[in-house]
Amino acid sequence: MSASSASVPVDPVAVMLDGLLADVHLDELHALVGESVGFGSNRDARGLLDLAALAFLACGATSADPLEFDELESRYLPESPVRGNVAHQKRRYALTAAVLIASGVEPEDTSWWKADDLWLYAFDAVVVFVRAASERRQLPIATICIALRDQT
Image (cartoon, rainbow, N blue to C red; front, top):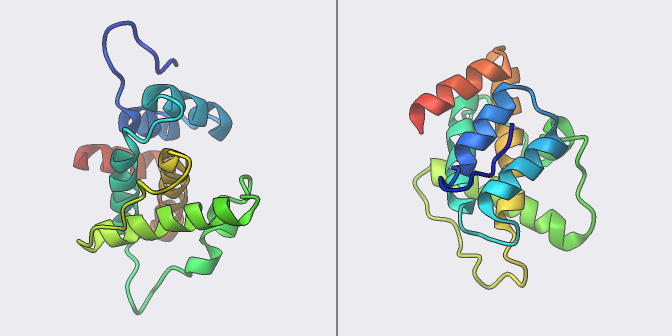
């Protein structure tokens, strides 16, 4: 599975969904999505944030049955802890941005970030919310990804 192509740009959202569907190891999937985005680019971060928003909606969280925000990372992405305050804040931004987008609210602009790396954290948000949707709905991740593909 390779994200690079000589003449056809590859959609990072499609790469992400295909990789999750195929149960590609997260490190490998991260590299594939990075190739499709173009490392060091924010070009397709919004597409990943929109996918994370759809995955959040698939969780079915409500005020009566909420997701615990403070547990999202440790529960659904334990193999990828962030190190450092900046990385922690950026990941939390991406998780929050997905919820805002799902609610119809445009998240804060990140053009002021010193590093143009929003896609890295949007990737994490997709993984978190896809896993949360899978657990809460008691469906395989592949089923969640197929449903998300139909919405994108």
